[in-house]
Every structure is written in C-alpha cells, then in structure tokens.
Image (cartoon, rainbow, N blue to C red; front, side, top):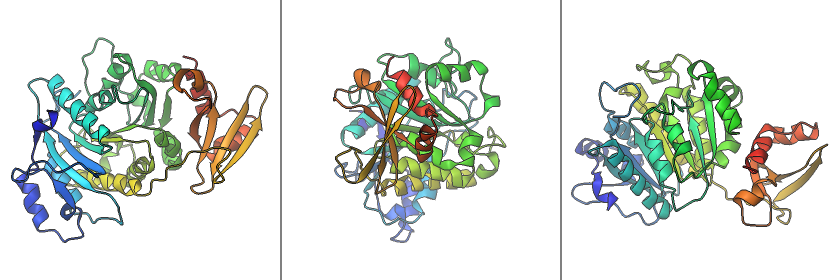
Length: 385
C-alpha cells in the first residue's frame, strides 16, 4: 500500500512541538510518528505531506528542501477559530526512479481524495503537480488546474519532464482529463511567444502579474472552479523570501500570495493544494508556513452554493446581446456571480441544464454594455471541442 512509503515526521519537529503553547497549530495536529504510526484519516480535513523529490528540477538544487523547517514555522502559528482536523502524514522520500516517486504521490493523493481529505503537498519541485493531477484518474472525469507561476511550464515536446515542462505532459498524456488550465501571475519575459499563443489556442486562462496585483479579486472565480492549485514559490518576488537564489525581483508580495491561498481555501471544489520550489531560507520558511495557514483559514469560510432560478438565495439576470442571451446568477449570501454556458452541456455534463461558470460582477456589467466576457467566450468555445 502506498501509505507504507510515508516516513514519519522528524524528531526535530516533534521536539519543537512539545514546547509550544496549547493554542499553537503544532499542538492540534495529529502526526505520523514512529511510536504511534499513521494518524486516523476519518473526519480529517487536511493531510500535510512532504515530498523529498527534486531530481527533475530544471536547474539542479544545491541542497534538498528542508521541509522540517517549513513544518516548524507552520506549527508555531496559532490556530484560527476553525472547525477542521489536521493530520501530518510525514514525508515521501525519493523512489528508485522519479517515476516511482510520482507513483507513490499519485496513489496517496488518490487515497486522500476518496476519503474527502485535502492533501497539502510541500514539494521540492513543481513537476510533482503531474503526479497529483494523475491522482484524479478514475475519480473525476474533468479536472481544472490553476497554477500560480511566472512561467507556463510547457517546455519542448521532446524534453523529458522537468519543473519547467510538466504542463506539456499533463496536456498530452492519456487519459486526458484536463478541462481547463489557468495561470495566475505569468511574466511575459519568462515565456516564449509560442507558449503565450498556445494558451490562446487552447482557450486556457492566463493573467499577467500586473493584472492580478492591480485587482487580486480576479483570482476568486478561477479558483472557485479549480480542483488543483499548484503554487510555484518562484512567482513570489525575491525580497519576500530573503533574496533566495533563483527568484526574480518581480513577483507577488507576501500579502498577495497569502490572499490567493485564502481564496483557494474558500473554493469548495478545490481538493489538492501544492506548494513547490521553495529555497532554504528562514524568511522563505515563514512565508510558506503563512501561505498554508491562510489556505486553511479560507477552508473554514467555505460556503457550498448551487445557483438556480428556484433558489431564493439567488437573483437571476438575463442579458440579451446581438448573438447570445447571457444568464447570470448572483448569490445574496456571498455576493458571488455565475454565468450559464450552454455549449459545455453536450460535452461535459449529463444534466439538462447549462453549466454554470464562476464570474465577476464586472463580467455582468460588461455584458450589459454588450461586451461578451472573455471567460465566457473561452468556456463556450471549449465546450464544442
């Protein structure tokens, strides 16, 4: 069984937790230890997993990521007013080959998904995203993946999978379960024009760093529909992580990246959260810990909503245009918006109602001005493919 490959949490982390006050996270997490074994998954909300794998790093790592230091930084933080059970399953060490590591990650994540437990993966390199995506095989037909990254990570067709090319493998490998891919925070000078053009041709969503930082709420509808969030720490500006090597002067600041993590937690569809490419620096460890904390915080504010005209908690708005009649719904509880996309019906839903795509109030206002929202157009076109 794949769970047998999990290595217990280090004694260094356990010793640190012994000294913490009772309100600290470390005193409220059920941990995998040599003495007690694996914690019970029943009723757990999150399972923290470290993945000590970096052999497919695009630029070889000078030293392995010290995941124990991220744990120590996380566990000294205080619990929020949460109704969530957290377990720490320990680490997955390198397999004989990288593919062996991927297999173990895939099997463990799949097992957690079947138990309705959200894996929080702390990995050395972002190619681990491929393994967590493959975990949905046989569980979910269509998967929406969101990546917070300065690069699209497509790479060359003939290139072996790496932390800069894992998306190519996700797109091309069978079975192809990827319905939508969204990139948040790409920086144009890191991406070839051919990659940007490919995003357009595949009707994927791509938001430049400047777009997101000028209005961080743009990420909420994208994350509301996401099943996996893969966060590349190199999307964060170097000054926020202690000027660690390999980081860019431009990127998200600490407040923005934590806001994105919180929106991810609020999304009631998001079931895998991964953070990768951190470097060994005390400031970076603290920021990674706070990102995970905000994800957990968001989870505790989840509201499960199903818009419909018959539900009194929603208002329905019909906006006629020259070519289409757009139908919007607004929640009275959360003030979130959705728009119907009829074209997805035949390809991806079995019900007799159009699919509902999360959107913003600005999309509704644009539609009122006869401007078809871009996210609606992409979903509409994708439905015919």
